[in-house]
Length: 300
Image (cartoon, rainbow, N blue to C red; front, side, top):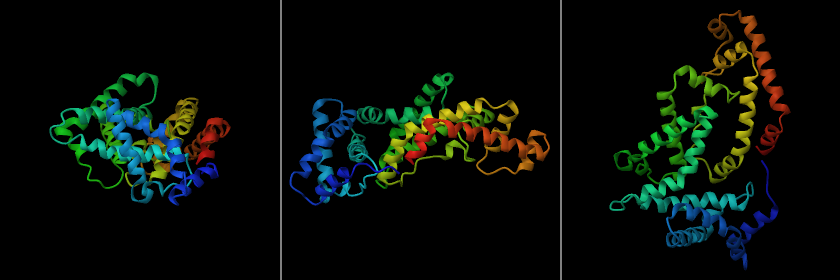
């Protein structure tokens, strides 16, 4: 885990200890970050200013309670952006009250559009899947709108609202993929992106994760995407037999015994052992040599 400058932690500590000018210095530092989040939610300048004031007040409330979890493992701006999202999410939920018309959904889509698009791109990579990604986005939106936003309104205030929504979006996307892609293609989609024996759609964000965990995951995601692309390209260099082994061996949530892999591939079990060693060596060597992967490993 990379720890940021000591001065970041010192600034938050000074705020918590009510040191003179500390709060003013922090506001000067985070104002642009909070404003961008408010503009994302609000439809005009007046709403943005009201949301900004509400967010700043929330950061000061209860003796700066929302700032206390900060431990320096991220930039202050990143941490505050995450906290602000949760504060604004409470404001967003109020827009789903009766007689608010479509204001709630308009703000909701503005607020979560980038997150939904990112989740879809992660699970459906590739230039040839642009149409499918568009269909997935529409399918998810329709599911969230259905029954007067029943799924969105199911949030009861426990845990992170953002985590709750993103978990729901991921599950809706998994359902879409399962309906749309044949099982064989689903397995291939999963296995070319992972050297771990867990299907991709089991990697669902937890609504119980701490703010620090969530923001670190958000910061690392770009590097992880680069590393995943390296792995996908590495898998493409494998022979047809090697890719078949990878698809079978990693296409289940549980480890498949070598004898079962051998039966499915119709090859001697001794050959499967050698095949496994050859495949994993090729992938490991490719990953070890790539700068993007090295950078990602250094960040976790």
